[in-house]
Length: 61
Image (cartoon, rainbow, N blue to C red; front, top):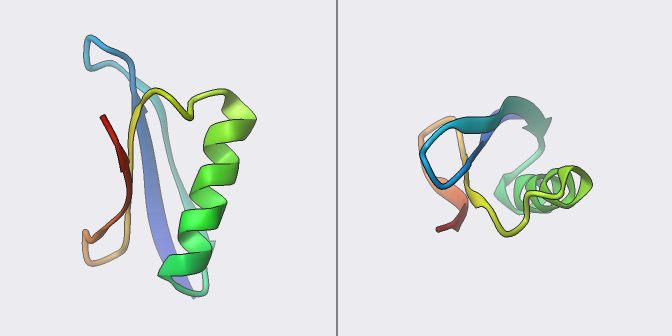
């Protein structure tokens, strides 16, 4: 299991969400990240989800 980080920003750069979660792999982390974004209503906000190695798993600008 690995720890991934999901961050969401509003247009002026303020962080709206900054949390970590555990997933088995990058594919599962992408699905979890998308679910969390939808749950909070942040799917269309600027966001990123990164792996422990700082690889972008999800990104929207």
